[in-house]
Image 1 (cartoon, rainbow, N blue to C red):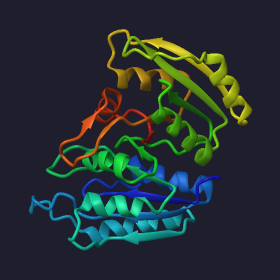
Image 2: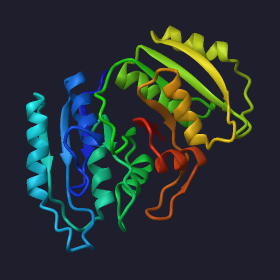
Image 3: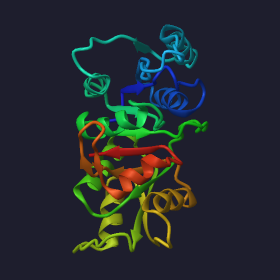
Image 4: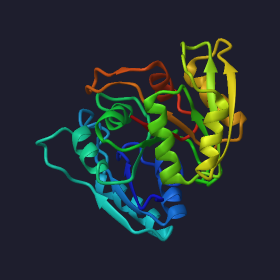
Length: 260
């Protein structure tokens, strides 16, 4: 089942046409012929001088989607019974996948909402670097593999929704113990039986952070996206994240699909 419905959270202060989460969401929806829902509001309501024109931003976003030939639903308002992060998660639950950035300035920002989505939406989330300007392409994906249930969930979401041509399983050695009774041959063999070419590589940490190591190895292998499981406990503004999840959110280098 390929994806049919994509949800994009694009704060009015950071939404940029043609790059970042907006550009990636539009190219992804176009590649799959998916319906795109765009939720845009002002996140930084504590800074009056920014006074972002939400409606103007929203119309530009819809125009960009329509110019790409997409069916687009625009959401610019919500009640204040719930927090913005909770409303975003509610909408995200209705879609196959969500897309968001990781900008971190302000009392409430994209990174906080992204963290909340990972653990509360029940759906996979793609976090896209702010300056990323390459269109989506159906090629190879890098999979952060540590033989956990979260990694397996992310793998299943990626295969089901994206239908990749090839998977590069990446295991970073030296970051944490990973006891397992499975060998890499079984991992590659079963994945191949699902109709996807696959290989596996072990890479040493070499003094890098785990997030940098995973992203660097994925890029070096020719992957256009990283797939990984999320670890942590969700409480807005008091997240306790696993090291890889936290590290990648601090410095997203390539689009990263995260499942929990």
